[in-house]
Amino acid sequence: MNIAVQVAQIASEARQASFVMSRLGTKAKNDMLLAMAEALQAQAPQLIAENAKDLEIGRQKGLSNAMLDRLMLDEKRIAAVADALREVAALPDPVGEVTKMWKRPNELMVGKMRIPLGVIGIIYEARPNVTADAAALCLKAGNAVILRGGSEAINSNLAIAGILQSVMAKQGIPTAALSLIPFTEREGVLEMLKQEELIDLIIPRGGESLIRFVVENSRIPVIKHYKGVCHVYVDDKADFDMAERIIINAKTQRPGVCNALETVLIHKDAAAGFIPRIAVTLSDLGVELRGDEAFRILAPIAKAADESDWHAEYLELILACKVVDDMDAAIAHINRYGSLHTESIITSDYSKAQRFIREVNSSCVMVNASTRFADGNQLGLGAEIGISTTKLHSFGPMGLEDLTTTKFIVYGDGQVRE
Image (cartoon, rainbow, N blue to C red; front, top):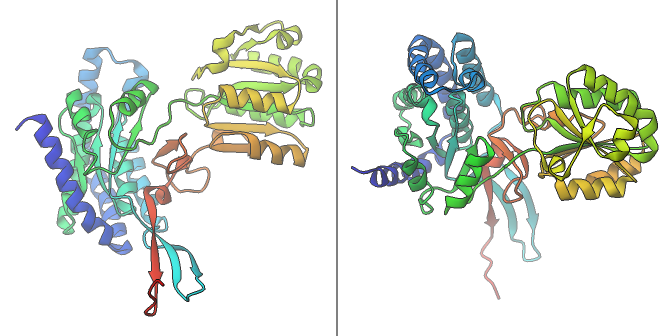
């Protein structure tokens, strides 16, 4: 059986299993997730042995230490994956929730009810924990899921999926509701992206090149998030102590993630008082500053920024810095160079804060807070499947609710249309 036929069969079986998942009650789903968590921890030695195969192959291929670290599983990390499944089990079930209801003049009662999306395809890179995390979220929301992990983690992913499927089988839940593409050829991804009649949504998780490849080749709607060019705007009404604390956190706490700060914009009236102090502080923390001419006059230590710096997602200790005339200029810069991810204003002026929230075209807009809070768990979603910088059907960090859609429900008493 060739790859195209195998992928089509996996997708077809997942579609059938999705109908069962959509009917599964909350208790059954939660019991399944809790049993999965126990099984993962009970079989940690087997998981670690399979993961060791991936690590050895990775070393032979010359994977970076950072990539090998993301790939590695040990008892502590397996326990964390199990805890994540328990956390998903504890979340409210969105399926069946009636979000609104209204009465029409003809006495019809019209409402909207949450339902699963159906079959979700997840394409991801070298993090084996995603196999369990993504599966848990999709299944809790009543969906079937098809997983296609990176070749670097194939043995780990197969082992994790096998453990989760064994729990499903014991509980009478079709294992096709959690499918893993079992081969690493790129053809498998391409065939998966052709199954528009069987897969409802594709969510790629990884670097920009992976996401662009998926978008360019998919016949199925894709939740995409290319990069995070996140901004902090320091207003002339900013508290400088607060601004410094937020910028340090947003840039240095974990610079290699998509919600880390990449560009600071500073109101010209705040420049003289704020730039010298923030430049020294950031430089002492090892941050390379790249500034426009106005910034560099007050911070000679900074290198000259060019046009490419305003577009850059550095993912390291480099920060682009610019002095702007006013908030209009700050918003214009963000809407031109931003990636629709996360922006923050530091100000004590309520009306400016409200205007910034309304006019900045990004999925997360913050007032007097670090961009690092753009995360499903931090925002109270419990867990996230990823971050969307598209507006259909979700915008920003995606939790359980975002793995559902709504349908209209109508209650009548014999009404007919005139």
